[in-house]
Structure formats: C-alpha cells, structure tokens
Length: 150
View: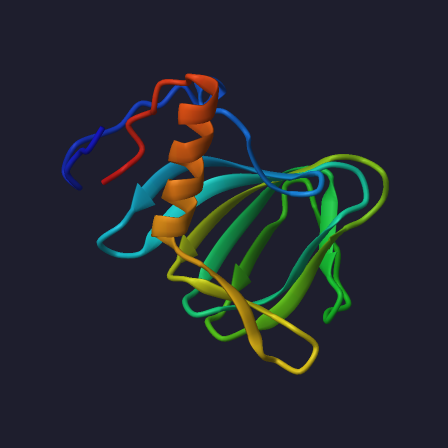
C-alpha cells in the first residue's frame, strides 16, 4: 500500500471507487502524501451542486475534465480543458454551472478549512482525513485499497 517517492506508480483509476463527500459530491483519490499533507483526486459533482465555502492553506492546481464550474467570488467559468491555479489562503465557493456533471482533477498542497459566513472554521480537510474517508468506504464495501499512499 505504501510506496516511496522514487517509485513510479501505475494506477487503474477505474478500480478506485468514488467516495461520497456530500450530497451529490464524490472524490476519487489518486495519490495521498501524508508526510507532505498533499493529495491528488478527482472531484465529481452531479448536476448543479456546490462545495461549501473554504480556504486552502496551500496552493491548488485544477484541470477540468468534464462539465464546468466557477467560484461565486469570481467572474470566470472553468470549462472542460481549462486549468485553474489557486494561491494559498484564497477563500472561495465552488459551484457547478449548468445541469451537466462536473469532474475535475485537483492537486491539493496542504489542508483546507471550511468556513461559515463570518469566516469561522467549521471543518478541516487534510490528507489524513481524505485517506480515512477512503479507507472507511473501502472497508464498508469490501473494496481492496489501491496503492495511492506515499
């Protein structure tokens, strides 16, 4: 299950399950680096959905594979084939545009905090919490863990 940073990894991503994250929101972990606190995952939001307002404590890169989304706090829309870079400490609310399902590849470097309207932290997501959610899901459904941890 563990591999070193020097080893290559081939992952049949189709065998990694979509893990529920919220109502109509799922993630598929591809790599988790517990030591660095970073992870790479696919995020899927079905139909018009929203990921709660949050602040990343490290930078994030995103590449849109399907559908489109925006941040309520911005005036652009990211569509399939678009790339987005988010600087650390940026606060935003991801919203899927239209009725089509959205899938985006995210590379997340450090934890992020879910915020209420007064910027109080109401939850935190880390590499460990993502890994824990993935492991619990696999155990619940008898799915073999993929070699995603390094």
